[in-house]
Length: 490
Ligand code: NAD
Image 1: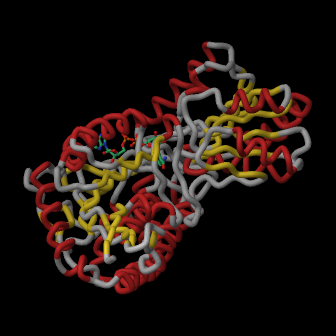
Image 2: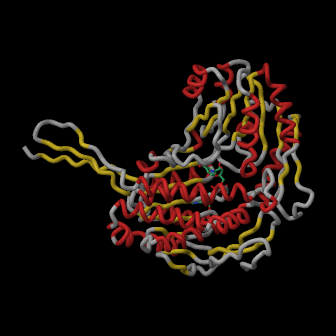
Image 3: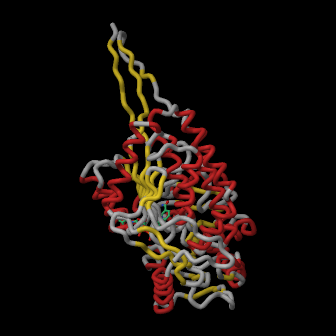
């Protein structure tokens, strides 16, 4: 395994776990193949870690928490994270190629993900010595203060769709707050993270501050969630797995941040600047082939301009091309064969239920036959309650429907179990704010849309999209616990 492809860099990270700044063979000795979504062929392997490996990593993290990492001044911790950020940028070409091959992302997207990952470590490196408590007015003769303390050892479960970005946002915040981390990345794509872990050691992070155990969710992932030494869990993934993680964590009263799925609405009013909205509407569903939790996957358009918007959007969809990561087209392949089957199943149910296709892009003629390609598709008049407007497709499929007025737009926007992100397109300032208040979601973009990115912007969901916040300064509150100290001095 790990055979180099002529156009790709050789994968230099071994099929082992990265614990206490060195490669360690998995206790069970197994390997998992890594498949290139652009051609469906295996090209590398990772370790199949298990509960024993998680135990080793937690012990290493506890030693770091009580030792070299825990003792470092916050400003020194921040400096090391800043150094890691620069090393990531130094290796941007290599990391982008690894990410593009592993996830099937167009190379330009992978480059943006590397930049975002570096930016997380830069942002949180700068924040680590600015996280402080408060003093609280209390009766005469007392002084009351609060400290923000790290949880200790934090666990991080990362999905495959944005490994570098989600690793940066989760681990960056946790380390900046003074925690030592154990990471279980996704078995479908995680090679870039193993390389970043090596860079973290090169940056000078003490052994045990950052540990990675690769493997399957039901093995290494579940063991991490259930390990009593893990004092906070940051989970990003599907709502179903998130429900299990939340339940398992509650058994031992461990705090969790759950970043789950979405079915985010793009709400376009008749007074919107449609020309400005069109590229954002396309990008929000095509980015990463629609495999983005915050993808703008539902399009709600005021009835008087519905036909016009669909016609203009249809022209753009018809011109979209999916192809291999290195071709750097509008979108790459889906992550794996089962994900492609899932998207095809959604499209089959649309055809069965008489839902009309406005336009469909194409798959590049020279795309390898073994790749997992889905052509971007725009569907119209999808009935409320249909799975295409209720469930995450996690593919490049946009479901459009018209609305009558503002109240109807709000009703439709909130008519799913999810609540992650919403886009509002209108020139009416008062309506912008009314919608931003009325829509049930963790983020609202007005006359713009940001799927991913936005390191500074607190991010997370309501309802089935999860709870807790990552990104921005807000995340640091979740990665710490407050201790209140009450001193009676007379
Ligand atoms: P998934 O839940 O199957 O896997 C996510 C991670 O959880 C992987 O690392 C996996 O190994 C691990 N895992 C699986 N079972 C586990 C268990 N029992 N215990 C612990 N860990 C376990 O999700 P997926 O299908 O790989 O990812 C896609 C989903 O993630 C989508 O629903 C998407 O919306 C969501 N997502 C959300 C965000 C966000 O920030 N809100 C970001 C990216 C992806």
